[in-house]
Image (cartoon, rainbow, N blue to C red):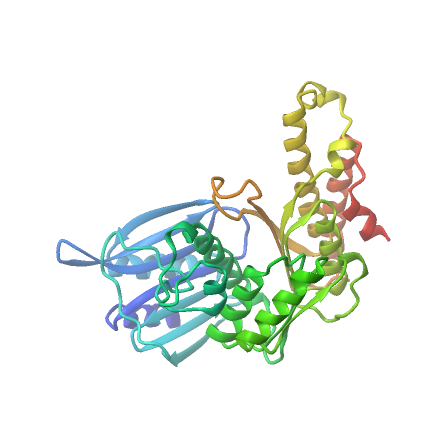
Length: 389
């Protein structure tokens, strides 16, 4: 860890903008740590933002305390460290055996540290930079200002892009990244994803949006051409019958209704997509199937039964993804006051030998647990059937 310690020592006195510790090897607990400089009573300190589940905890530390903290957590199970300063940026990757791979480069953007203690939220899409699709959505004015009544939509788009930022290490390098958005609708998040990856991050991407509505697809293709997004194409069709792609790296399914989410997940698994992101919608299937004497007093109330069915549906989807080799999390997509459809299922394909005895045993255990829950509830979810087929 000496390389990391030396790098941290240097950045503390080199116009530090931000430090990000991410990608823990174990699920649960702290998922990310962010550090930024703050000026409190004319003393330069560093604010630690520690992310645990849906909560964020803040604490101000000295430079020495930050160096000690990050060195410890990087040795204790985190894979990636990113440092951004005014003049340079660096990434450190820690292998399973503790070996460190370090990359340092000159910063392309001038970053001016914000030393205010309670600073305004910094979004991935800047509030003052005009973006075509945001203007067409009515989220932004021609000058780049966010329309007050559409600020919730702006927040939702940026929150989604934060999820995309988190999965970047799981995407391939050295070739185009192929992404499919099933049930794309009017595609404001699809356009946001393309803009972020292609325009801001300079990734080579090949993206497809699919939806049932022909007029929506025609409109989205017109917008894509208008913005000059050459590698973003939209097609009209059903997820069940889609056969225009192979070697897909990421599958996105946002608010695909009922079992359409299951077909999207099954497609992603079949392709061996490295990343699967799904925000389910209208989970009706299990509601009509659930039979469980132990929970009869719970299921006798229609509203409770409906909500329980939705949660059990997504829990089983996550368990079945685990059984297919994905590290899976169920995350809060966006605050409840904005939409009740606020659960995201995120699956990242484990880089393990699928044929190894250990991996096979792990997957079998996950499948058995999912099967036990299906038997307990007397349900037969579509995703399980598709995977068996």
